[in-house]
Image 1 (cartoon, rainbow, N blue to C red):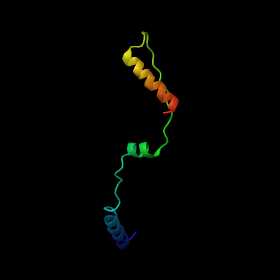
Image 2 (cartoon, rainbow, N blue to C red; image 1 turned 135 degrees about the vertical axis):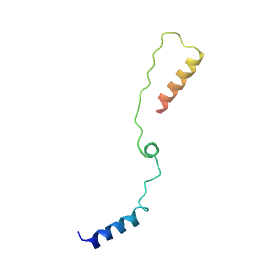
Image 3 (cartoon, rainbow, N blue to C red; image 1 turned 30 degrees about the vertical axis):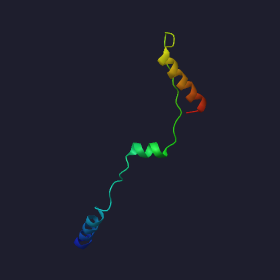
Image 4 (cartoon, rainbow, N blue to C red; image 1 turned 120 degrees about the horizontal axis):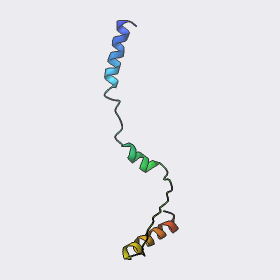
Length: 69
């Protein structure tokens, strides 16, 4: 490769480098906005009777499972 061709390549790279920049969207944000969500299961174990706070949480989980999300 001659010096003229090499200098032309260096000048081209110097002109293009400032234009070629990375995107500003983080990968996790792109994934949350564009990828299909996966299903999941919620399982919990307890040994005592349901208290007031537990009953409320159980009702929310039951309602979410009926609605599908």
